[in-house]
Image 1 (tube, rainbow, N blue to C red):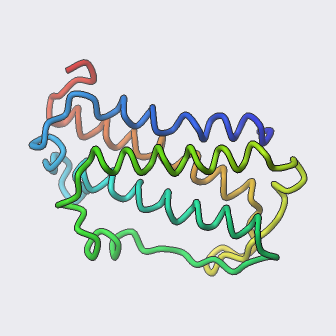
Image 2 (image 1 turned 45 degrees about the horizontal axis):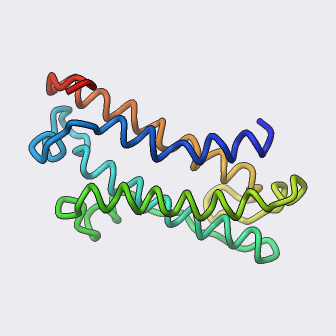
Length: 159
């Protein structure tokens, strides 16, 4: 996908996520209707934390020469960062603000700079374009799990 289109798709993620959780009450956000899986609140907190991590990665690739970036352990973040207590509205706002800022930065980036690289501690060399593709797909990937949870609870998207 061309970087310009990828940036536009990236910018749409927060609205897709807000639509996926419309009408949910705290009991829905905290329910675990699929055994062994996170609640919707936990998923949203995970997405917000990953946005911040990826924003840092994107900025570092643009500002530094071939920086080393490290992975994150989602379960460690979930255990240590109070996912069960965080306000979903604040998390959605953080996602939107982060994507708005990064979208503005990326809109100024020449197409060649999307090939700048970082070295991921787990995956090796990655381009800015690859990092952007990964974070762009992250919200839609998790929306499928949110929809699965809604369905398991019998809560339709229109409620």
